Image 1 (spheres, one colour):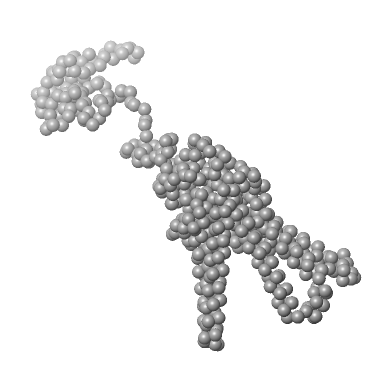
Image 2 (cartoon, helix red, strand yellow; image 1 turned 120 degrees about the horizontal axis):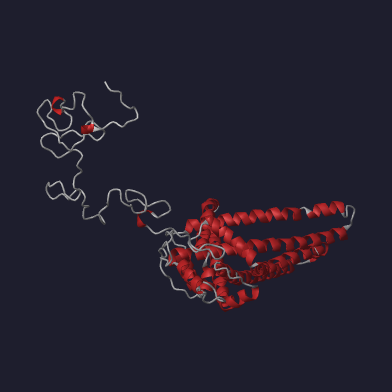
Length: 470
């Protein structure tokens, strides 16, 4: 047997020599010779090499022959293997370039895109103290503080004027009482009952006149202080002169509104007093028992009516209404919002009262502190002078604290009015249009604006509208 070169390449398939001398008929399955079952192989097919493919059964085409992709299976109306259905944009070639990825699978939007073709949420703008949409309790409180901070001269100046008459009256009464205690006691001992009655009536009349005047001034200034609040919503600062110039035409309407409210309150008090007197006189001792539930019922009725009419000054100023129309407008706006307005008003009143008492505690301790340290052995004159000084300081500090509280409560009332109009009249839409156009920069936002009706604002920018929170 000859020795072969190990480095020589061995022939494959039919080129490889057989051990029996190359006789293919004796070695079935090699080349084109017949096999044990009599089947013949293709002379051009490979042998047992890596490309060897056996013959398929039952006359089927060869295993290695790929199907024609453009030819369908021929069953019914099914498309061919390579033909895409009609809903597809075009044929996709296997192994060809694929389109870039767009969105997530299964028809769902990708991250960062609004689902189901809904408009993207766009927060309402906040050009000033509050956003242009219906307000929450925290936004009303925050907007009130910001209004006072941004328009301190207008808000605090008007509030000091509103509280000045009451402060002056308290200071005068304290000074007169402290300086004329001895002489007044001596005069009372020698005065006749007619003199005492005339003195008491005159004193009560003076107090009543001052109180009525203070209430009228307070009502007018309360309506005027609505102007800086409305302008601050669009980030428009307001000075004291500008505030008064814009609200001056509504002064008489505000005075009539105050007169109507005072007359209604006085009439209600007289009715309650008449009922109480009639019960006590007609039923004697048992009539007094009926006053126990009657007084709380009267207080509840007063609180209910006061809450219904709380935004009347703002309606008179901003919508340029009369006194009666302002009351009707307030009654209409507060419908279905009574408990919310009552809760906000109650919380704000408690806050202002507690802060005022905390500030006034050191002032109430001044007489004892000063009397024990400055003049521990002083006479009557020193005590009188100390009492007058403490009384005047208390009145002035009380007026300042009351002015801050009054400005805060007025701002809350004005923002409640703006919030009610946003909820019921669509004022936020009108203010947004005014903000976009920049019209009437020296006027009062909301004055002369017609109600657009409730509902979400459909903006022109991308994203569409913000949700309706009414």
